[in-house]
Amino acid sequence: MKLLAVMGHEETRPLVRELFKKHRVNMFSNISIRGCNCQPSDFESQSWWPADESIGAYSSLCFAILEDDKAVSIMEELESKPVAVEPNFPARAFLMNVEKTA
Image (tube, rainbow, N blue to C red; front, side, top):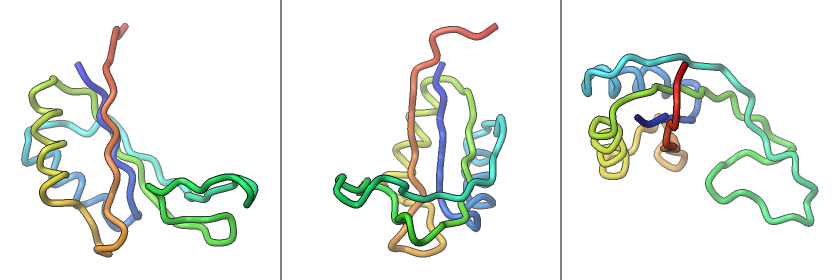
């Protein structure tokens, strides 16, 4: 089992939902978040996220717990066809192992 989390601009949420439906995956949940990089300026910024401490990005985090093969298929599709409303800022996906559920 895998936990797949996809974070992007809020406008990408319907696109992520469509991607999950296409792969017959139920979205477990989604959260609206305000993304920012609150690190002091002398630290290296996170290259994978466009926001900095002066500019907030209204974002969405969608996630699902799913079978390994479906997770791989979705990740491969995201790599070949990124989900994005604005091409310079595609949604980012994170795939993690699920050791146990209760």
